[in-house]
Image (cartoon, rainbow, N blue to C red):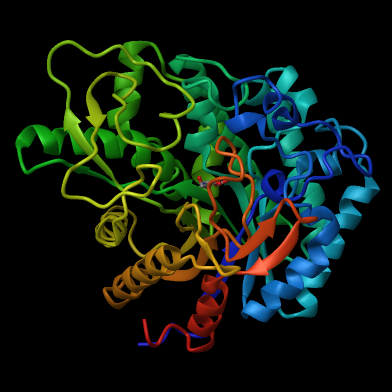
Length: 469
Ligand code: NOJ
């Protein structure tokens, strides 16, 4: 089977992770510009001041993407380039940069797929309370409108938010992302609701502008499976899916929050404040939302916690996706299993989990249109005689594309696949050590780009539309 011609083969990045030029051409400071410089927060104090200098080298990078045969480039806009303070005056240089980047993509027939929010919040808004302050929501909707007006003639695919669960959970529970708050479930669930209300307003607005494109959101997709077939493990998996999947997918696709979670939050006092108007807009947006973006790296394996709950202690190392943590309410914990394969960062490799998870989604949400907006392998790539031999990455992507193929054959509506990432970039907490790209960046040699083995391999996959996978 070949992937159909309306299936997009792409690759992705995010502004803070690639652009650099953190204080150039009128850009305002972001939460990450500040947070990454707090000692101990990131691996060896790495930050995105220069990142991989994509801001200055975007032409060279887009030319490489074209050479790779990429059909679509998913990238994010840095809000603070457009609005240095989050709201207020527009910075024309910011609009100009993204116009240039979009036009450069279009020159080669590469479809720009834009994320509006990939975690870099203008610092002024963070200081004023971030996602807990209604000002941020209003500012986001205004920023989104500005982007729709400026780019919507050429950009037909918009993602409002990237991985709400990650920036809210790591921001308000683990303290590993800005604003660095720990163990505050009340704030965490409030931020999640506020983000979904902002998403909903942006969707309604976009559709009212008749730009004839599509809009959706990208969520983490980490389907939970019990460690065995016991009743306890089934309970644990249901609970985990309710909090990590239903809570994040239901409001977007069904326009309502899952009662299982909301009832528990009422009892515990962590229920977010929500007005009837907000809930009505969330409901309306669900009927207009065009797609769900899935960032799939791994499933989670869970077991029920019985008896005394171990003290929850989150550090930079264990807040980055590795198993071992109890859930915030002490109901289950994630487990590393002896019979599974793992990456160097202890992320499970499971194409089967992907297929099973996609089927779970089909059962709950029907024929919704899906894009895989991220999938890839974080690794330290060996260099042999100056060739970057990222064979494990080829294997990982191949297995996951096979999984997508199988899911499509079984009736799941997947319309595109974006490998993470197009180029080696800054991992938020792991510096440049954890590589994901098809293109290597030589930080010791003026950021020179080099094609990896996977670059050539992905080109041949796209060329043959995945026929030989
Ligand atoms: C998800 C995030 O969207 C991206 O920014 C990050 O680098 C990758 N996962 C890998 O952890």
